[in-house]
Length: 221
Image (tube, rainbow, N blue to C red; front, side, top):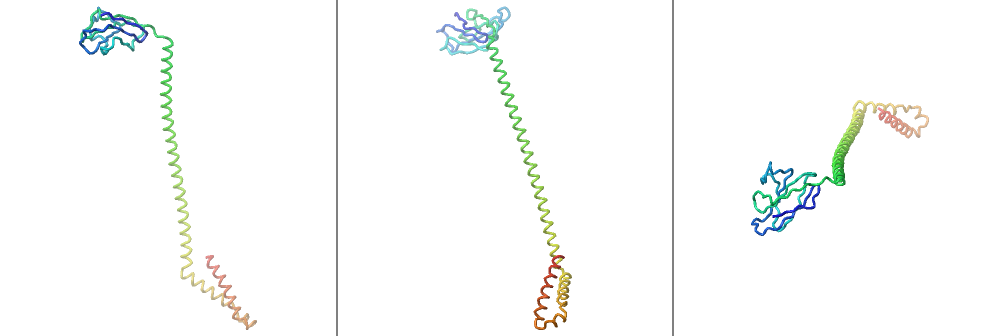
């Protein structure tokens, strides 16, 4: 079986072989090996990389080859070690500078994209952490202000209750009544003699005025 290797590049090669009608298997075995030497390795099947191709095809593109490397490529239809007439030796070409630059650019772009994504994730985590801390401090500040306001309201309520209790003490009420009596007693007979007709009305008015003054004094206590 005569095979041919065509369109050889730095990383790929196309192998073509004739159809074998007597092949009983359902696939062809395309085997290849780099830096091959018949003296060292012979045609041992274990030394080859193998790819299985359906018998409906008579060509195959071998990929991922190494530039500037000697390869041996064999095609067989039986699960056995290939014979010398089923193999072909070829040499891969040097790497194309444009391809090398393109791969370098692709690699740099991939690294840049990966780094950007990682930095973006880190930035999002930091922003979330800062916002979370700010929100917690804001809640704590609001709670502290509410506590201070509640304490102030309670103190005011307690002060009012104490004033009411002081005012409602029996002693204070007695003092208030005594002051009222003294105020009313200040209406002397002389005032009554000056105007007998209006004495009752005058006494009533004076007593009322003095009662109001006494009430104001009591409220001041």
